[in-house]
Image (cartoon, rainbow, N blue to C red; front, side, top):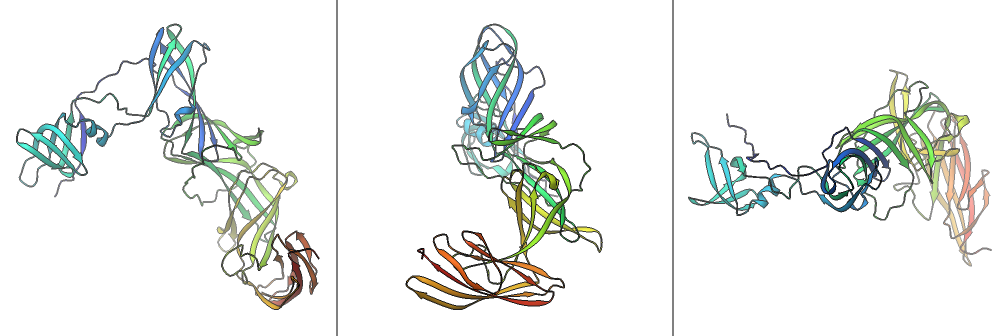
Length: 475
């Protein structure tokens, strides 16, 4: 059997560095994550200093750190230690970085054998490491070695300018020798959170059970062990454009828990909302973590609404807007409706139980923006299968800049129950309009919308007719 090829790197000599700042206690970590993919990290460590100048290496920082945001504080003796210079070293040890630094230096390469040929050792100066080839000057001349055939490379030492982990290097000045408790604060990108909600409709779509989970995605290049975790919800202004969060899809439904205390304590903070986890949590690098963050609410009053939007000015939904009737679930975020909490922006997945086998089935989803308490939520979860709306422009006249249009909308209900369809005639914001006549009563929903509530019986058809007059000037 052909032996599996592998490529390993061996350091023959590891050079130790002369540094102060050896960690002597378990670090304390505070992590505040914002919903636009960045976080503030606060880490406390005990460090040893000699009187005078010290070189201190602070390792295990996030590789996505913003070095300009670093703040160093000596907590145990404020002002006793000051930072004179700071370097952020992020050129990490890897095969390419090592070989790049060993150009024109001696290396030893072990090349694996083939068939009955034994492996061989080639020693010489590394002239180039280009693509998949290594070029050496050995006693036998120029050797070109394919990397795929390399079994081992031996180097004499680790270059001083390479680090094994992202590291902050400080030149500090200490007033006296001894151990000090210090805190380092910095911001990092590539870590963020979002809210994921689950709504489970009851049998007749008049109420729902509601729960919320936090999804944290950490690609910052560092892990945060036993961290004090805080989440900030809101639109915090930053100068650089925020990076987008990429998270795994969590589509599973979690059972509604009892009335236990919520994992997060929510409070207003500045113009935002803060959620503080009531226990420590470890967030590893390259990890997606979910934590329940609001107390599940059962029996939230809700209603299902059918809406048909029609407009000659824009197609707000794409596709054939003359046929589709939207299905929406509406409920109020009020305390008397068993909610009344600040809901961060996020996706709400809606499910309903199939009584045939008592299994939950997915029926749609929508995204909400940051929603304060006492506000109404309207979730567009899909289009009705058995309700069809067909529009016909019956007449269209224009005289002296004044438009008169007659419309007919046929609503066909193929369900075995009566429904009410809200027909919204949408106008552009730059026109003045009025409904001249109609076969159904209507309400002026807002400055751009005339709404006709139309009842359609089971397996029945109802035709709505109306005439509108509009102009770009007020008559």
